[in-house]
Image (cartoon, rainbow, N blue to C red; front, side, top):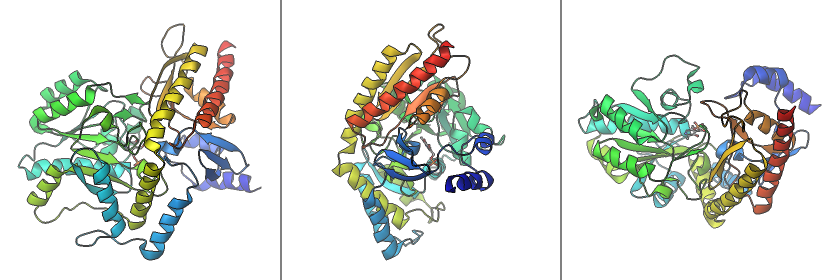
Length: 437
Ligand code: PLP
């Protein structure tokens, strides 16, 4: 049958990203998806599952949106692609750039387009260093990032990432990357003192760490970071690759803190994953310095920077987010999700902290007898039991975490949140039984 044939070909030819290749090769893919509608996906066997992760925190407007397919079709039949190097441009890229300038906080008014989050990160590090070089401070080149931060897999982004298993592919990292403790102002101040502000180009943070286990920056943190960066002539980069476009109940998460970074990174939600796109937004100040001081050329550009079809899909996607009030829905449904987590926390003694900000959330697994993590990870068992019952969630099991994380599409409604919680509850009951055995 087709399913078996696909499983076999998948094992033979498809090297899955960020996966246990051995497990994939032995057991084959759990799901081969064939279609999606709203918050649900259907696989080759006809099984329907609720997507509690919006795939990789990105399918914000949900599956099966014909408007996005039409936007891509219209643009592709007119002009699928043309490069944006030098004096070339195209209308969707121009219109999306100006739309983003309208949406982004403060004076973040100019955009450098990429095709994803990793490219946005490496671009930002180069732009930050270039900025200081242009201003006569070529020695300001260190990039400070945080433990448990995730910034992608290109060599710069891997080096900035503060989750050690992601360093396992290479023992040769990019130089001039330094990690500080998660959301610790003291650790940042100490690092600046040790490394010297005159050697630091930028500090990068996610407002909510995603892959690191959905850790939300405490109130006041980002405001203090902004001050510290200003006092020390350090650029502030905020990675909104997950948090952008409504995920946290605001269009961009820095709005929760009233902070405008010098560079803001986006990807994922800008197209809801319908086509690859990302970018780096910079303030008017940085943009003007680049114009005034660059000796002629900015020698950094991807073939697909400002891809016409990707930008057309981005524009349509943002139109959907605005017309359907998905940012507000994220805030309201986020509260519903939190209420669900709290009721589960009352029922199951092995649930520790629960947290959400809009529609990104986490529940921690804790041994009630010790108040510490269990000796073996529990979260993957919860996720496996949930998958059996038709709910997709992800787990974070490194750096001392034993956490189930959630990030459903922003179109999710109350009834679907209740379904998510109800399946999760069944999965937790199954895990509870196995813990008692
Ligand atoms: N930054 C953050 C905060 C992310 O969560 C991710 C991906 O999950 C990235 C960067 C890398 O993005 P991409 O996988 O599109 O390269």
